[in-house]
Amino acid sequence: MKSAYSMMALAALAFTACDDESYNDWALPQSNSQEAAQSVAVKVDGASVVNYEAIEDDDALVSVFTPTVSSSSASKTTYSIVFNNGTIIAVNEEGKVRAGDLKEVVIAQYGRAPEKRTLEGTVNALVDIDGVTTLVKNPVTIEAQLTAPVIESAYYYVGSANGWSDSDKTYVFKRADETKSVYDDPIFTVTIPASFDAEKPTERVDEWFKIAPESAYGAENFWDNLIGAETDGCSDLKATLVTTKPQAFSQPKTDGALYYQLTLNMMEYTITVTPLAFEEWIYAPGNPKWDPETAAALRSPDSDGVYSGYVYLDGEFKFTKHRNWKDGEYNAKTFSDWATGIAPADPTFSSDNTNIKAETAGLYKVTVDVANGIFEATLTTWGIVGPAQDGGWDADTDMTWDATENAYVYTGALKAGEFKFRANDGWDINLGGTNDDLVAGGANLTIATDGNYVVKLYPCRNNSEKIYCTVTAQ
Image 1 (cartoon, rainbow, N blue to C red):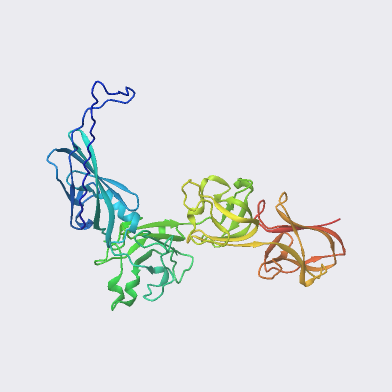
Image 2 (cartoon, one colour; image 1 turned 180 degrees about the vertical axis):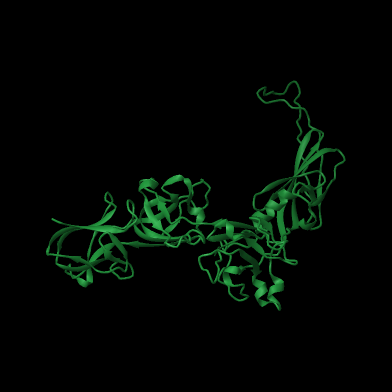
């Protein structure tokens, strides 16, 4: 621990009186001689490492230095520390600070990892001597070590959904920001499917599981290194995790869930279980019309929380669970894995803005996994391809987006023959089937006779559960 002395310089000011015959400049102020200022030094002796394992709560006082004031005339001394990152905390006359205040400085500079940290700063001592306050500064070094449980880099679900496999890592818990230390982001989440009877696939069975840390897979006995519940069959939606004689968690088949979201808080060593039964549809209101009743619809055919559809995005938007705002939404906080050009409107959420934002306006093919926080999107432009237009199956005729119609539109000549709709001049995304029910990769459509037509492709399902087109002869 460093220590230092700071001495106040002595200063004296003398005035010489003029005799009666001297010229007096009465504009100058008159002053009596001052007493010589007191000299004072403050010595700062280091304290031992502040170890938070021995500290019961944040309001406890911990010693960071031992001060000694040289002047016996000092009536009061007030201390503070200015750390090198600009943070200032108060110190009492014994050189002690509130444990919570010091912890915040450590976290701000180093994060929450339980390692010994060194903090540099300056002690400001305001010394009162006979009514005169003197500022004395000393450099100070403080060592502190936070405490936290061991948090591993990865955790896995082991249970009914993967046949209690000791090698299958299908269901891995993920963090919102994998670039952060596990001590700064100790929240791990995974979504698993509910379990069904092997002989009666439509009948639910109870869900049983434990948690495997990464280290368990390299241990001599995998099953002795799992994390689980205090009591076997614990079905609490929030429970404590234990490593000593861990038992299996359980969720009853009677809850009707199709999926479970499991959230680990490894700083608190708790698990939160959220039974999920996803709706078949969600909706995407946004700029310029925030109206769920007419918004584009995305469908999850298996009700597994993975929704797909076409949405025209122009700036900010969200997803609603129904065609209203009152029944809940999925927003920027739902997702952590983003498509290129799609991101939170306010990544810091400092303005309470949870909207999602598309950088480029256009019609997107969107797939969102709301259970696992994955957002996929492809910006598309559309054309008509096939013998019904001049390019045959090799080149398509471009269509134009009509914002009023929420449709891609082509007006012009077409020939008798087959056609389909395709995106981005390629075959990765194409629609066919029947005019009133277009599906990905569907059958070819037909123009009956040569002529001029208005063809409108309605991909967004704003007013229908189907993607469809209209073909009108002029």
